[in-house]
Length: 462
Image (cartoon, rainbow, N blue to C red; front, side):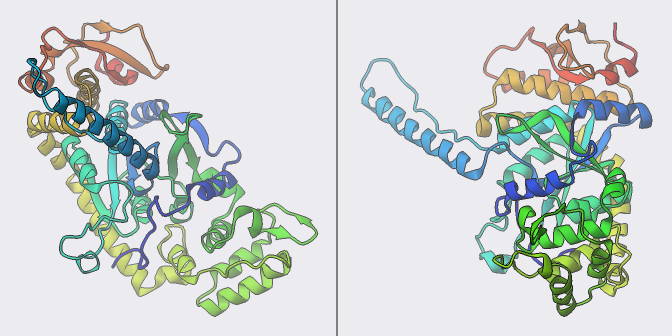
């Protein structure tokens, strides 16, 4: 049974700005603080001697650009291409042959490719959860079953497959990520959806994008929320109440406006939170609203009533819930299927990595051709990123061989990473690409960024 009977809104249909206000509400006492991902991966490797595993909610990952911005760039590209084509055609009778130009549109998924490759080089192992496709009967025989998704899913599937990143679909990706963390499949959850603070367990670690001043997500830092510390300030039942009202149309500012003055959102009685979690139908939710919220609302303000199905999903599928919904037939069936699915994921982990390694050269070639033709990635950029991916995976798995590394570069991004120098001839997977690259790459020296502890743990740093 699907974890959410109601269609999950994609990031493009949600309101990231209002959700940011909800995140900021829980960003207290160092929660939501910007932290280097390389630092987190280093600490995890020191403690567990394996890569940091993260369940990534694809539906909420920020591309750095909105769809509207992407379309604006593509519109400008088409306009310039038309001018270039007209100029080319006007020179048809010139003696010098001018090849016909090719239109290569900008796609936000190019940013996804580079971010994933950069993070993998930092010793991070991703497991991506994508939203379930629409039913064929809803979109027609030739319709796009991922029409409501955040981004072009066929590009995601190609990138993830060629990078060897495991993924599967779920009706509610946030719930799936929370249960993967609860069952020990991953070590942390990465999502921009604040609902994760309701669904996850009391010891969960949650990452979300850190937006830089330019407006795009940082490639180095993430915001970290440790739920164990967060629960000391905001109880789970209180979190449920806040999210229920927010998802019902309340803004953070309006939800707890008090007649005659303002009050903290955390200042409402704990009794009200407990009563909300005891509601079993819409009538009881409405009574709760009338008794505990309406008397304190501004008379000129007419908010919407809480949506019971949102509260029901929180109570039924949250890892932390001990409500009677948790013991319902639907919830028990979901948890049984979830446990079986998690065991299967754990059991097939090593086999999936071995299968990827057995096809490494072919997959790398496919990824290079796809990134070149679709995202116009330059040769030097790709081979440097891919070198970081190959070296990090080799060292993170079983302490690979770094004897081919000539020396450490003097340039360091931060104390947790290091750039190393390696000849492309010494990396067989990348050297194999020479037949697919137009320019001569003989003697090319790569300068990939990798996690410093991986190099040191190998014992070949000199």
